[in-house]
Structures are given as C-alpha cells and as structure tokens.
Length: 428
Image (cartoon, rainbow, N blue to C red; front, side):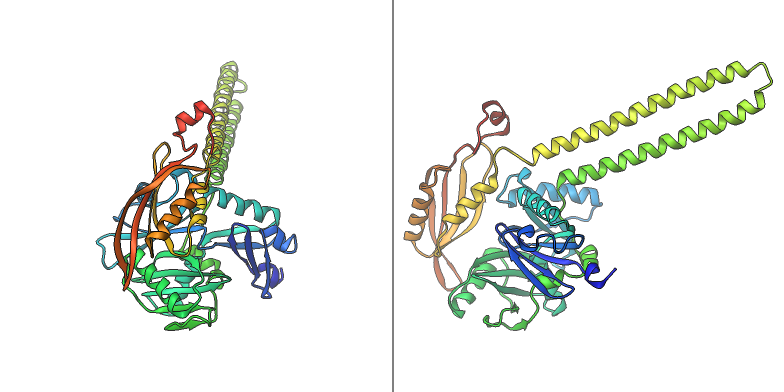
C-alpha cells in the first residue's frame, strides 16, 4: 500500500462548508459538503473529521473518581443543564483529566447536534471514506497548546471572516467559541477578553495559529486541523463521537456473534458426547435410551437457538427505537440556529434555557440598550417565536467596557412535550 493510501485525510466540517486536506501531498479541497469537495478522488481512505467551533460545544465538568460506567452516568446527568439543546438532540464524548484545583477529576466534554453528526457519516459514506475519528476542532487547538508548552492561554485563529477562540487553563481545554472577525487588533483583543469573562477564566497569553495578522504572545504556522493528523494521539488522549444507532448496532453484532459461538460450541460438545456414548453402547440394550437422549438434546439446542434469535431481534428493536429517538419530528437545534442568526454585532448570547413545553429564556450581553431592543424586534419577526419580551436588564461591565446584561423570554412555536406531540402530531 502506498504512503498516499495510508495517510489519513483531515476534514474540517461545518454545515454548508468543508475543507479537506490530503496529508499525503498537502492538496486542499473545499466544497459545500465532503462529497462535493472531493467526489470519489479519495475513495477508500480513512479520515479524521474535525467539527468547527461554530458547530461543536465544549464544556468542562468536575466529576468524582469513579468507574467508567459510573462516570458516564454522572456526565450524562450533569451535562444537559449546560447545553443549549435537548438531551436527545446531541451526541457527546469526553476525556478525563486531573485538575490541581479540584479534589476529583475534570471531564472535558465535546458535543455536536445529532443531525450534524449523522450528516458527517452520510457525507463520508457518499465519498467512500471511512471516518476513524470525529472530534471537535477545538481539541486541535488544545494539542497545539501542549506542543507549544502553553498550559494557560487563548488559542486563536482567523478562519475566513471568523475568529475562533479556544481557552486552555491548567493544561485543559475549558471553553470554545467562534465570533465574526473584528476589524482591528484592539477589537480582536476585546473579543478575547470577553471570552475569558464569559468562561470565567483569568486572562492569559494569546497563541495565534496560522494567523500572522493577529498580534499574539506566541505564533505558530501550523493550524489546529493539522494537529489532529496523528490518529494514535486521538486514541490515546481524546475520544470519537459515534451515533447512538451505530453504537447499538455494534453491540447487536457482538451479541449475535457471542450467541452463535455459544450455540456452535454446544452442538460440538453434545455431538461429541453422543458419539462417544453411542459407540460404547451400540451393542447394548440401551441404544434406544441413547437415541431418546439425543432427541432431547436436539430440542434443547433448538430452544437455545430460538432464545438467541429472540435476543438478537430485541437488540434490533432497540436499535430501531434509538434511530427514531434521535430523529425527532422537531429539533431544538433549529431554534438555536434562528436565535444565533438574529444576533447583531453589538450583542452576544451567554445562555439559553429551552425545554419541551416550557418558555424559552435567552440570556446575553449587549453594548447598548438599543441593541437589545433591536434583538427583540428581530426575533419578533421570526414565525418560529411568539410573545418575546424583555424579562430583565441590568448594567454591568466586561473588563473596562460597560455592557447591558439582559434576559428575554418567549415561546418557540410548536415546542410541545413529547407525549403531547405524539397525540397532536404537532411540529416545528
């Protein structure tokens, strides 16, 4: 196999735009999706897919020392209140790290909307590539901070008309965001300080990756995507996001294989035992009893086969339920997208509270009260929302800049509880 076939393909993915880098020869492709960018020119290759900062969520959660199964349950319970999406609308993974400031451990969680992850797998399949890892691109910034020996820093990078900011504290990724590219160095600095304030982290040096136009304490020519070229580092330090139905199918295949091996072993054992026993008793008066026993063993094996097939069918049914559960009739992700599109340059959102059947609460900060009024007016134009109004507003500051901290409330049209939704057939 040639080196070109062995090297992984790096894919920076975001809705409506992808950048594909062939690490074997440095060739770069761009398109609206993976198949559009490369066609079948990279068919048969493995790929590392990095989800852009705009499409991924990063959260750092303190957790106690516990077994892997217990930690998974703890993270699954602590994560939903921190996410702007419903529990069934995203897929997450995490890496464990020690934190000197904590008694226990730190789970650094990366998450993406389920529908976006499903699109990634569909796109790679259409291009006939195999994704060996799917991770948030912000972890590429974290790997760069490790390589550059910067345990406390803001890793920034200019990507077209956007500026990505990934915060690293005590050697761990803590926060990630993407903002419209500010027009000046001063405003870039302000955006970085605002990110520290929103994340609750103390300001630290700036590391610029592949962005010579950004004034930084440390600069490096390599971008964050290139840091993910080593699949072994991902396996050792990170995680890969997997669709629930794919995980269920893998368990199902394992159960089928185990049941099949058990049945084959039982058939061989019984057959061998019957052969020996029959050989010894062939000329005795017990031949009929042996045949009766063989018939009984055959019925038992048939029963075992039926039980194994029933278990496999139940696993298939569970996989089908998961498939339907993660393709809801309505998506919280659409609500979040419409809200994000309504934000102007003088407003940034700091939190969302969105539950089925409950009012939507939007929290944020703005430079002026007029900016808040314009945001309310902009949201009011959207047919997806009704009754939006200002819930509270208070003056505050970020660094030396005065801001308005506000909260809005309203209703997302068609945002029904699951049981009610099933009865009415309502949709968003």
